[in-house]
Image (cartoon, rainbow, N blue to C red; front, side, top):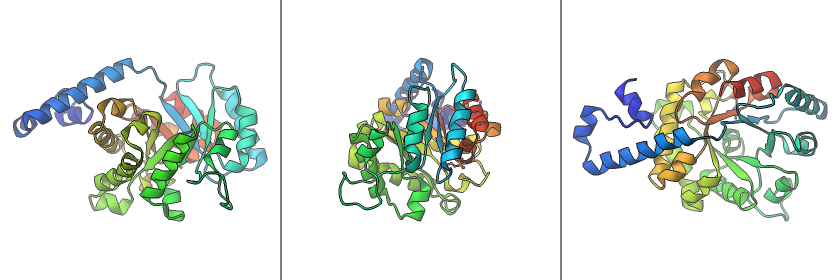
Amino acid sequence: MRADTAYMSGSLLLRTSERESLPDSLIIRHLIFALIQQRHRHNMTRLPNIIGNWKMHGTRDSVRALLNDMMARLPSRPAAQFAVCVPAIYLSIVQEQLAGSQINWGAQDLSPNPPGAHTGDIAAEMLRDYGCRYVIVGHSERRTQHGEDNMLVAQKYAVAQRAGLTPILCVGETAQQRAAGETHMVIAAQLEAVLQYSGVQSLAAGIIAYEPVWAIGTGDTATPEQAQVVHHDIRQQIAACDPVVAQQLPILYGGSMQPQNAADLLAQPDIDGGLIGGASLQADSFLAIGGCA
Ligand code: PGA
């Protein structure tokens, strides 16, 4: 392993040039963070999260068929914790078919408001009523197609959590932002909104999904190295507020994850699972990704 890769993965190693250029306080901070990370990795018993995002796909018949297929193929001891985030209109079918199974479920969006006069919206309490465990917030398709900004996403994150849901906070940069060297800045701002609004402890009961916008639905997956760099960066930003929360926080990768590329992505030290779009619409590919974990 190259020393700079070791550094990125939270190893105790620092390059000589880094040791010479960094102040002692930063080196000590790096070592504490790396030690906690190593301990966490050794002690980690939690299964990786493989979460399907069905987006706006399905009919009553196809949803029933897909759930049946998933249940039939699910190994008795899955290597991953599976869940599906489905169109809200199908939640009752999903609850009916998955209740008592090893597969959890959730929604793809929620209103930032409590139940009331908000035509067309769905409240966190309603999602709980249908047994949802998760809700996706800030998916890039909602950010772009519905003009959701970081503040609104932070509000949705907080409202979901208050209702007892686990929010899956999506962050990620566009191709243009990556080309302009803005990846860190964009994602830091997306995270900062939640940190400011709800505090770092809120991430102790949340999930982050790094989804590079250019990789979503394009077949153009981030390389494991590209993804690891950003995942590590995300964890470092959280660690600056609370190293323990940072180490326990599941950070999923999303963007054209397939059975063919999942093993290499999931082998990265800071990738704790996947948020799967297209490949979650077939039971075999979805479960196969979990088998790579
Ligand atoms: P994809 O979608 O796997 O089809 O790229 C991922 C997502 O948008 O959550």
